[in-house]
Image 1 (cartoon, rainbow, N blue to C red):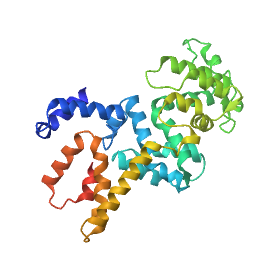
Image 2 (tube, rainbow, N blue to C red):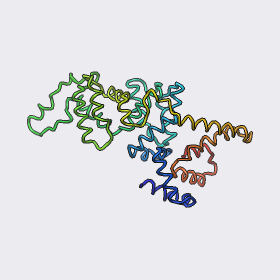
Image 3 (tube, rainbow, N blue to C red):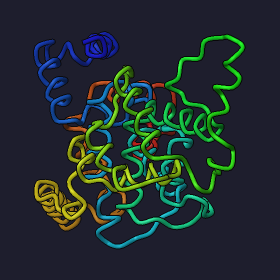
Image 4 (cartoon, rainbow, N blue to C red):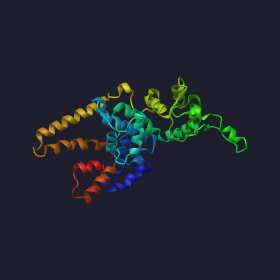
Length: 310
């Protein structure tokens, strides 16, 4: 509601032509459809679990053809795609997602769309949880138990040395059962989104030891966790989206019709117009405000610049 009212006040001149009731109807329809996050600032995109899930779903629907065509991209190229939807999306999150896939490989290595997408889903949706998991993992490597409450007495120093440094080599990882106990405690007290404890327990039940990135990769590949999150389809259905395919077919038909019946000059520009305008139908009001503001400030703005601002 706070964002809706803010959008209403920022765009009151435009809204006065249509009415407040219509604005709220369109705004909450866009929230329900998940399109309200398009072209919004990162602070808004990551503000709620619904916004995060909507962004993940939109990224998949917009760029699934990358995977369908079998294209492999670098982390920087995937980041450029993310910025088409959220211009100030931080590179750090993209790099963290790529590191789940690549681990110790160079960050400029190529990745498939499905590998990056499922890793990105875990890193983006559970980002606060993963920060806490990283701290727990480092404590366990150092021989500390994050769940242990140490009373400051003379015997506390002996209690800290329960685990030998040789038993927690970074290459060997940490004991899976102890790691899960710490994660279960974290999920119980965390105010942020966490993967279901039962699914994490099942995922770790067959492992004796594991590394931090091995754990992240297991999270990314677990279809049970993917279904619980509910933003993306199963991996086998990743490139199937009949509703989007129908919209694309309609869009191609519109472009073809305009290219045949429209003016012959600057045909490239005319074919781009419907492609860029079509997604704005269900977009929130803020991009309209930005577009009007940019037109007033810069006489040299063109359609391409306008789209990037949105």
